[in-house]
Length: 421
Image (cartoon, rainbow, N blue to C red; front, side, top):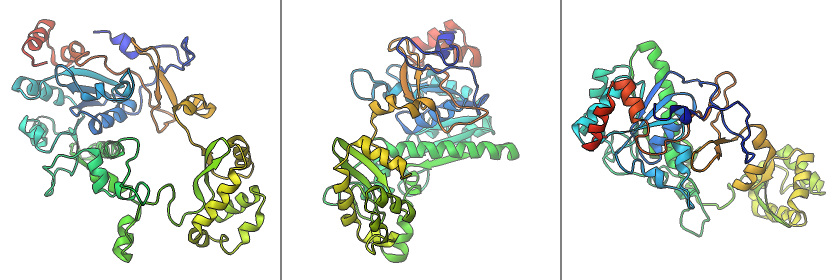
């Protein structure tokens, strides 16, 4: 119903469009095929978790508010707001006004049949709507409920509003990112949100495994600040045991040398030569093999103590070379190194193409839209983009509400007229 065949974009595997873009197909079903997910979240954290599960084969039904739908439809740069094409892929969209009883009931009926629910509202919101864990587990004990919020579902800060940037600040990320003489910088993407979503997805998969034994679902509580905290390496024990407070250090990690971006005659290039054996090969590539035995650079600790001096020496050398010349030397001497990629380099790179790291998804307005492919790669049940993002909120109202709730077209029209869907 409602253009289902178009939504799946089924084409022969490996077909190349007229524009030369590789088009993703709908052949395999994925590791999570058969699982039903209902996504209540908006913006980034909840929808990104839904994207991950959908990429792995789950049937993700996204509930959007009637009208404009998820604000993510309007996010992104340039004339065409195509972020939605990524975060909305592999989902079916229905509309329901969750602030009215009838909309809540429709969501509840979908959740009674679901395996996983995703929500990223302020704690207490879904409880007000009668969609909290206690109410849902009473009708569906097997339901796994993934909850993402700024501070978690418990604790003195749980009722506070929280976005990804706030979680990055509290979790320790912002304090150590940027140059030491400037205010904290942010990463160019919403890393706090996507980390919380990734841990939420991980928790859902673990809960699915536990359900095989217990037969019951549970709540996955993923806090933005705790997701960021998880990737802070030894920041906490360093302070706890030695009183070390990490500071912003620009493009380097203090004590890890050489590992930096260096200038060439025609651009910049990343070199990671901080292991003893690797540094010896780098010194050979530089035509200065004696550096490997120089007491200032011979050991990991010594290179860390003389980091700035060593970086200046390497930078003076790289500036005599083009990027192509430097890369040839790095490959020949087996030194971890690489170019600084933008979207242009990614789309032109043969390694991205060989691994299908970029896929194209047919879109009725834009044609094939290229975007990052699902990962990680599974050999037997690979993830895929099987369905383009919904064109408009409620695109699949007839399909989902008709098949799963048994509502007729007349009933749906009446609900739409009253603003319920």
